Length: 60
Image 1 (cartoon, rainbow, N blue to C red):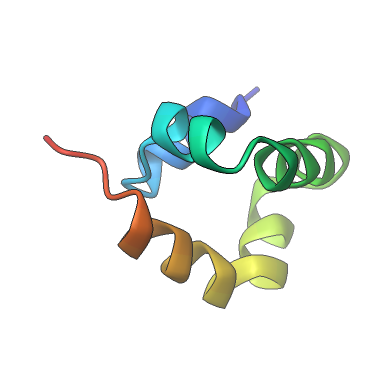
Image 2: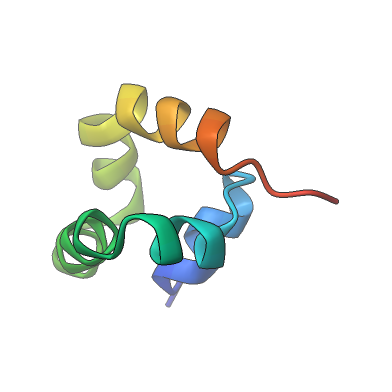
């Protein structure tokens, strides 16, 4: 099963930076992620994920 951190990494989002800057938002999304299938989560939050990726882009 994919964890929320692994999911964010797969979307090229720096989970630690996101969690540090916006802990409440990170926790809300983590809770929802754990309740639904990853594909469903992506469908529901596609535009939000893109915005978060722009803010907390994971450096390779």
